[in-house]
Length: 278
Image (cartoon, rainbow, N blue to C red):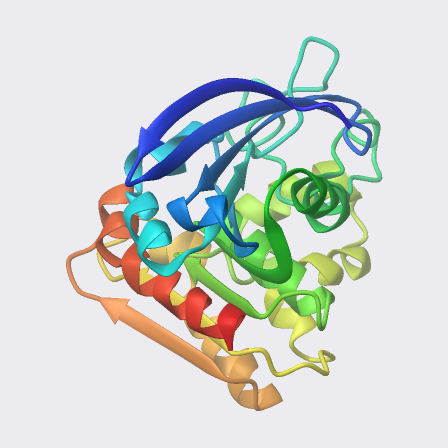
C-alpha cells in the first residue's frame, strides 16, 4: 500500500507528518496524521489511535490538542485519521452531522452510503495493518477520541477484545441509539431497524462484552451537548450493571471544545502509555 507524505514538521524532537493513501475499505483517498516521537528512531513503539468528532479532519487533533508533547515524553506513536471518506464520488449531505465529516465509525448498509462509509473496517483493520507495516510500531494499541470519535473509540474497543490494551474518550456519544445525533446517522447509514444499531452503541455492547478493559472518560459539565447528545450517566449505569471498570470524571466549567481536550490530553496519553507498556 503506497503512502504519500504530504506534510512533515518537526515537533518535540519528533515529526508530525500527514500521509495520503488509497483506501481499499473506503474506496477513496484518505489522509492520516502520524506523530513519530524521537524514540521511533531507535525502537518499535506502541500506537495510540485518535478518532475525531463531527466535522473534523485529521488536522483538528494535531493542531489543537497538544498531544505531541506527551507522546514524545512517553514514547508513543499517535495516529489520527480523517473522520469519513471524502471526495467528489463519495455520498454527502448538506447537514453538518451527516455525510462527509460524519462517518460515525461504522459500516453503512444503506444506499447511497454503503459504497464508501466503512470507517469501522478502516479503523479496525486497514489502518492498523498500514501503520504496523510502514512505521516502527509494535503490536500494542490504544484507542481514544472526542465526541463522535469517543463513541468510535468505545465501541471499537468493546467489539474487539484483545485488540487494544487501553481505551479512553472525551465527551463521547455513549448511547447513540437514544440521542438525536445517533438516531439521525444510524437511520441513514444502517436503516430504520434499531436492532441493528446495538453493535455500534457502547451502552448496548456493555451488556454482552466479555473483556473488562478499563474505560477512562472525561466530560465537561458546561458542555453544550451534555444533556441532549452525550448523557454520560447512561454509560455509568451500563458499566455498573455489567460490572465493567469505568473512571468517569466530570469537570465543572469545561465545554465541548478542544480547550477541554487539551486540558486533559496529557493524562490520557499517560494512561495509554502505562497500559500499552504494561
